[in-house]
Length: 233
Ligand SMILES: *Cc1c(COP(=O)(O)O)cnc(C)c1O
Image (tube, rainbow, N blue to C red):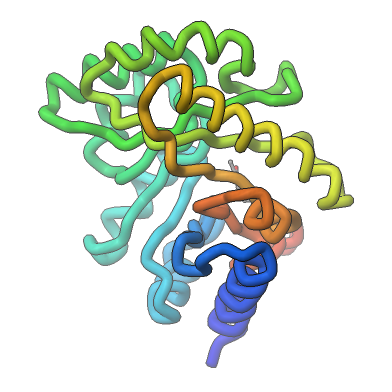
């Protein structure tokens, strides 16, 4: 059995344990394997180990890799999306986690109508108001919700966040709590369910699960360290 198979197995066990200790159904938490920077061979190993759902943060990279892999895999775009790439990415992905502005949401809605698609999306929230990150700030999102719900092609499924990186995973918890509470508030205000929460990465996914994550985006804990790889390459 390969190392990757063992690592994937270990993540599944940790997801199960985190769900169980917080009184949640482990089956309600999905593992998104973030394969960015890793070659298709690594993704194939993961597929052999039973993983079928993958995330990439760059449109070009996703579009280059997906056709080389089995067509039954499910792809999620988790990184910044520019309007000029919407037309190319929409047919290739099941979910977009990074709808971070009303302008982008409008472009996706318009192009989805032209293509006859109903994309499933997460609204990305920039909770710490970091200028280096994309996403709605919570206050504008509250006032924009009504406009977002007029976009009939968008299937808005929930919220996504990337907390400021801190090696101490406990520092992520307040952000996960904030995203869940914002979701609860927006559900009430908008009168529509937002069942999905995309939160948690390699170093903090168990905390995210304790706070309500329905999908965790895990890269290096499955595929290995991206920095070590590029130095070795
Ligand atoms: C790279 C990336 C991840 C995965 O990060 P790891 O620390 O390798 O698990 C998750 N979400 C987004 C948006 C990313 O860009």
